[in-house]
Length: 318
Image (cartoon, rainbow, N blue to C red; front, side):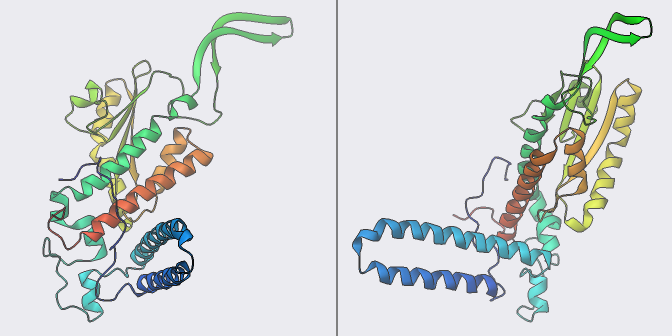
């Protein structure tokens, strides 16, 4: 089983099958030719060996970038060499997935294979994205508006009048779901994160992220899904309905509760729900852009690894 702590150390061999990655191969050949030319020049001067090592590293980086760009581009236009496509292109006779015997399409590999699901491949990808999302949300607490006790002064026709009351010190002018409290906590359904508050644990449900304020009885539940992009809306509705009863129960118990499903596509496309979530928590501007980009990259890179193991029952080679 995979877990969210494991990292990807290789971005090679994402496409590979019966010549269907010609653009990538062509780019690699170009890199190799350039590398050979550099080697010929090196014969004239042994003092350039260190520079050559740097060039080799650059070539490796370039090849990885080419592989990544190729698989991303091909996945968008359904040009990856899935067995279903290989049959369509006349390069193979059987479209079956070697893992589950279902029809192996790009969507099947990235989101629908029962064996990949049971082995934890999709959960591993989900938890990698979830870990970053939880980290991003935990930084939002400095962006809320917190009421504080003070002297409120009003100017009237008879002169200034004042009394002891509550004023609001605002640190961000945007409306934030967490305005009005400064004691909120973020918990995530991950091994190395704090557990959810007892009011959530008692229900038996496990939202991916819970943002909780004890003083104001506010609870924001965030439920992350990494679906195939064509199923984003379906995933959003499913998760909202799944937690609808819990949201009602919390509200009946006196909590200001809300469920916010979030979708990051398996191929790295960001759902509008992710943008809305960060905005409502006052994560805006360049901070929001950076966060969404990183979430997309993690989902994308994780899916590339899943794709590269599409024909392998074993998760790790000996």
